Image (tube, rainbow over all chains, first blue to last red; front, side):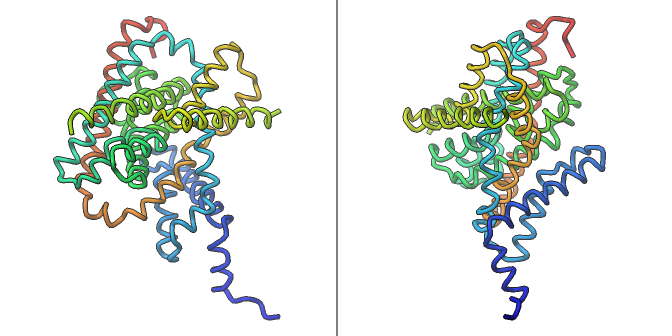
Length: 240
Length: 120
């Protein structure tokens, strides 16, 4: 029996879930290594680096996204349990949350309206198509909620998922710089702003920096999702 | 036992998904699951050490979990190439204004509700 040639091995491997899964972990590990190596330099966030590496490799090797997702779905699946697990840091900081209740609710509501308003407003000014406008409206909301909202509004859920992640990356990269610029020193306010504007990716960044900021970010992400899921379809029904 | 708490977390999500489908509430199952677990902890008034470890493990690499969906950007390259300007406008000033507005409001209002000694 002759051993199969490299091309055959590649065809076999590129269809196995194991390949997509391994690729995801390796790319993220490489991005994380670079991030740690540079002293957590904010612009070298591992998420965009891993995405660029994987998308580049898939494009070069002509592997469709669907084949990659066969394996990557196991990582993607963990988003659900991780969202549930956010209840734990919330509970750990219950006392702080209680103390700042009214400020939190006003901040989250204002953030929810600002996020959707700015998204649609700026995209409209730039001349976006209706489909893009409807898909970009919930961009600051955590991906699963945002996709549901986009579907309800008549946007494209898969485009929304990408815009949500780009928003999260933008917030994680530049959010801390903006917070320094407007002189926010309160960890509660810093965390909440990251959670409202940049959902889970902002929360992940806040969790790395400060546990109180992380808890407020997680809470803000959840409540902003709730508020936007209720408000946005209502506002759209009234305006259009 | 870590498995027990992993099962608890998945169980909360499953109940959440069921409520979402059965009631038609536009809130996704995992978020309802988070509310259920949070309520449970408040009622119990105790956080088991192993639940803390299990949840911590899931959240430690939260950012990694967004990578597979993010790679989906390759499906939308033509649209993003066509509409890069409005998308960039919505992403950059749009997101950053949101960060500034919500942080400023919370910091300003926080002064009346947060006591002096635990201000950071």
